[in-house]
Image 1 (cartoon, rainbow, N blue to C red):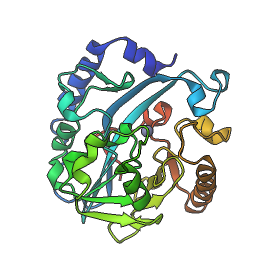
Image 2: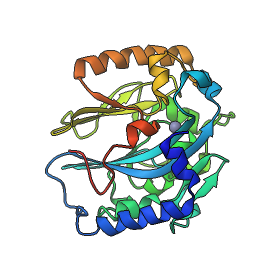
Image 3: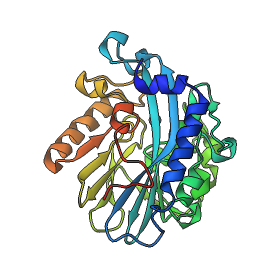
Length: 292
Ligand SMILES: [Zn+2]
């Protein structure tokens, strides 16, 4: 069992104390909502996912380090021309007491902190956010989507169709995004999209995990090029051992996308963050700190 899992087992009290400390130290350093000079990336805490069966990801327990548990970050991107929220959590804010108590939904989706107060601490209200984009429609990425119905939603057509399909579609939480159906949106046809027109924030099409799965590429001045890979991979071992999760929409499509992405990463020199990977996420700066 790794450090993070042990941390969870220590219980809610530790989490609450940690949060209190985080809040206490965040006060005077909180950035205002004024447009930042440089592009900024904030990492927000949208929960964790309890250990799952490695077989779901086509790996054997002996092939991985520790168990298969995840973190679920949300991300706020602040650009001089506007803001973008990337992925919006797995437990809706209204179900989280936000007093340090951990909520568990669907047996494995856990959260202790609401998203809206995390944005407020940075000086933003959900209705101020210019753009909403999610890597894909799975329930651990859409929980607070309705909160951003006033934003312009950037979505691939294939994803939109799956989200609002009458047919049964797995791992979907349609209530969490029902207000987006008629929201202002930019619909993409399996294509990339330069969000602010200067090449620093680019939605990258990456179908396979879901029909319209996408990633986010950032050109950060100090940090350098960065790819938030969505769920192109969940475990680093999917990448090193060439495994595709059992629940991907189209495994062959995932493999083709991964090949293209590997080439893009080679050419751009981008750092790749596997969003759900606890080892990737643990050492990263969390809001109110930021990358620029
Ligand atoms: Zn996910």
